[in-house]
Image: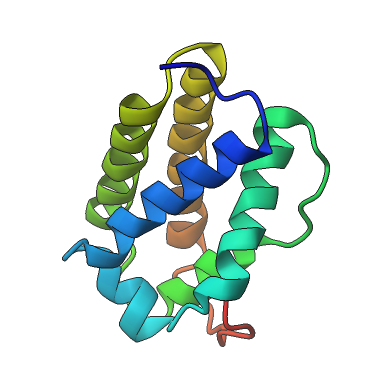
Length: 134
């Protein structure tokens, strides 16, 4: 195994992770039934997101926090769902990579999950419509 070093590594990570998400009984339905994710557009966004975070690529634009807050108005996105997402992400990293960037990816994912849960709780009473098919 090796560390995450380039865009191809990010693509492997994202593709493998979302392959697990798609069939996961806890969070898979959020992606397939609630959001109806267009994987053809979502996966490249995630390549850019993680490449920007881990490789300083500066290729991502968007507001994932807002999107997740909007989605939380349509379905439950609580501790259980985020724990499942995080478990799958960490599992994928551990299966594919070893090193400082792999550790950084797990730390960043944990921080993102924690922050999103907090923001979703804080915005729980506002009415927001899902504005984009993420």
